[in-house]
Amino acid sequence: MIPKHTPTGVERFFPEDDIIVSKTDLKGKITYANKVFLDISGFSEEEVLGQPHNIIRHPAMPKCIFKLAWDTLQSGEEIFAYVNNLCKSGDNYWVYAHMTPTFDDAGAITGYHSSRRVPERPAVEAAEALYAALLAEEQRHDDWREGMKASAHMLSGVLDEKKVEYDEFVFSL
Image (cartoon, rainbow, N blue to C red):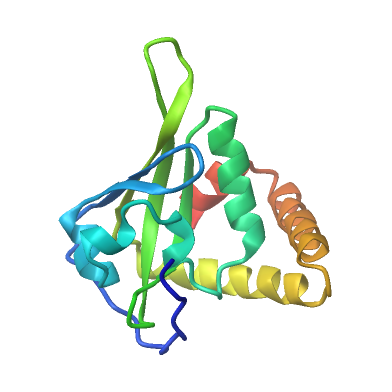
């Protein structure tokens, strides 16, 4: 297992025409990472294959966003999200992610696929503000599960107030 690195506060960027691609098995372990993924994250292919995808999870990302993503994917649906990722160096990079389940011929989910593009800056700024509030709510609780539940409730309230589903909210940023 690769140890987590301390965030440096330095944001990295990748070319607008590039697409970061990774695939995982049902447990979220990386089975494929393209060159763009490896280049921006700073990991080698040997370092990421077989590792949990959360090796690039930035600590500023609220857990409730990942729970929503996993719940959506495991139900057989796709999801879009803005995600702040952590590089091996501790630098970070933002992505606009499209995550989908992968199906076999019988319709069973066999893994997950994520394609990530360069996000628009206003959307990143909006996501950062929301994520900071969700993360603060999570951190108010001693038990991380209770914190995640409370931040998910907070997110649900934001969506209810705007009268939109999560994907519609993401598209509106």
